[in-house]
Image (tube, rainbow, N blue to C red; front, side):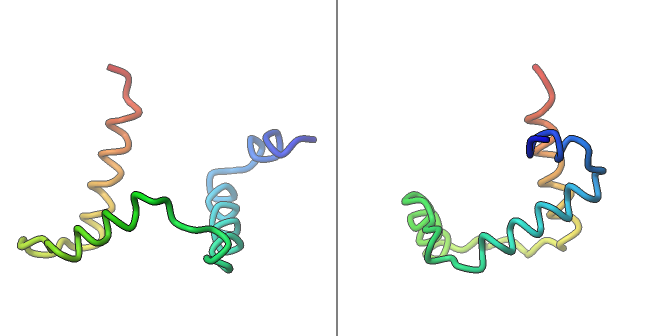
Length: 76
C-alpha cells in the first residue's frame, strides 16, 4: 500500500490529524527547514509598515482565508 493510497482512505478528520502530526514533526527542528529567501523580506516589510486598520477577530480572518482559497479552487 502506498502512502497516497493510505491518505486517500482517511476521513477528513483523520487527514487533518495527520497534517497536524506531520507539522509537529517538521517544526520540531526549525533549523533543519529554513524559510524561503522571500519570507525574510515579507516579514521585514510588514514589521516596518504595520497595518493601521483595526485587528480582525480570528474567526473572521479564518473565514476570509477559506473564502480566498475556495475562490482559487473554483474554475473560471
